[in-house]
Length: 335
Image (cartoon, rainbow, N blue to C red; front, side, top):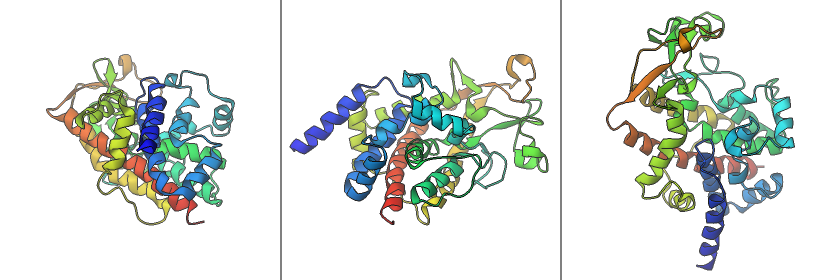
């Protein structure tokens, strides 16, 4: 009993000391904390993680990939380590997502919206780094320590539907299109030149927020509320999720293939995320066609969208935490 009290006290202090995190913050901390707790059943992996991170927890380092981008929620300038990581990884801003057209049923490498430095490839590369057999990739350069804190972050990202699925318009912002079809044979499937982007839902707005923000932030809080916790009760929420694992979180096969499977798995959820809203009339930002084509539009949530999204967020945050722990266990306990 004393052990459980101490664990809860540590978690409570850890989270209460943090500002109001989003999925880019609170959600990532939760994913890391879930993995930290699950890894208590895998002492070999837990010890290896502690060794590589110099005593830091997965929860602590889970936001560093965003801090390297200068995100304001970090409330500090990028550290020297984060600056070094950013300088040798010029594509690091793109490590966090793929932009697969939501009409697609699976992630397919080299299709529209995929890239050799997207979230799927970065996770696979980081796993290979931790195994000591990283392949050649001139867009990704990670040390073992960097690979570990990138995994702690990007495994969370790839379980957020708008970090994988994207909505595209034609060049005039009139019709929703699939670049795989309308851009077939064009460089980059015409994305940005003859096909317009909405940048993962960031350009689809509802009031003062955008659709991506709702998924990053609001729906995590609603997920917590759906199981009886306030937005500030993150420590209790972590304990709840660990005791109530999401269904079907296990992944089979080589760990380096898991990220592609996760991206494919979430595509139907991405379809829900976009088709569950009513799109207003789209237009180019400020009615001026930018150098790289993109469209903005106001959205309205369909009935039950928010409650259904909360259920998705609850499942996905839990899956990310359990899968992060399982991924690291598969890497370190098979060596």
